[in-house]
Length: 366
View 1: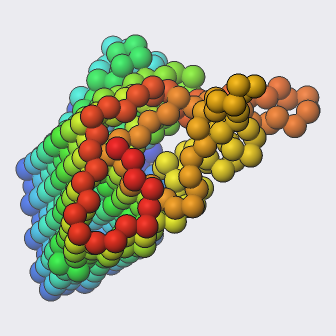
View 2: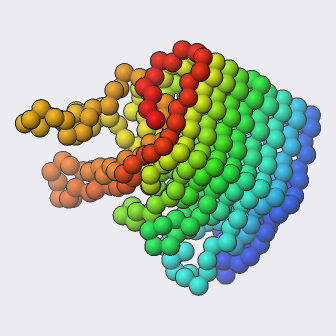
View 3: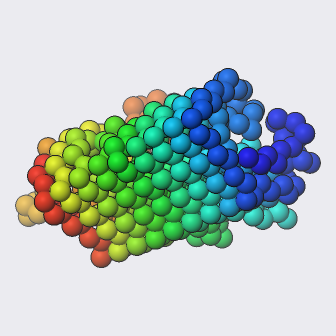
């Protein structure tokens, strides 16, 4: 749709710190096949190894907004990723810290992707790479996506001391009428704020069996920097969707305390199996913790220090967090053991799970 890019693919220092927006563009594709050749990691139109076939608007500048863009796809085959608003800026936290005079202003707001009766061989994002990403929407209606679908995917974390200042609010993902995807989330972010987001699934399939309206993990380059992000009032609604998988949650947030999040499931038969690669976002393995006597260990008085978690089935939850630090390299060697902070939340309050109709083989926690 609209492209704002630097003169060089690697975006030399003087160029990428400038301003270049890509806003209010529209792409309409009907009864067509779009194929893009694989590109290098330096290309503005490659997200990792995932070449982008369709973008409503894309900016390669640090201060570039990709906002208000729309992609409409009907009856088509897309061989590559689809993005409504794409910010692709090659920066590290160290580079950002070396430019204290520049405050990120990369707002990826109000982008929309609508895919109807089509197939996408790649990932789909409403917004990708913004420091702020609010009011983005992805709607799949009878569509097949051989990849993940996310309404808003964050870039790096903007923060004031230990508190995140970036917001990813009011994003929405709808999977309707027999749509099929590999993985799905309204917001996938690291150490940011994400509230009032919605994921709605009706008579559709998520192949990898994990669903989160908001997945918020601690994923900074400087692992010791514990930047917190608020995740409240997020909603996951599932109806008429039989599912065998691993985990279903409105919010998983290892950086703060999720509250007032809700899961509502109606007329759906759900079976969730325990798998350490997926349970609690794949961050914490209860079986491993139990085997090392860190969960379920009894004191001399017979009281558990921390209750063991059931690993017979997977989990349905409204909000989950954990204060969790793991230690790696515990085998005696010249290298001292290293502590890795995986989570620093302490409570999850006022979250709701509502189940109406159907059969559920799963652990259910608020």
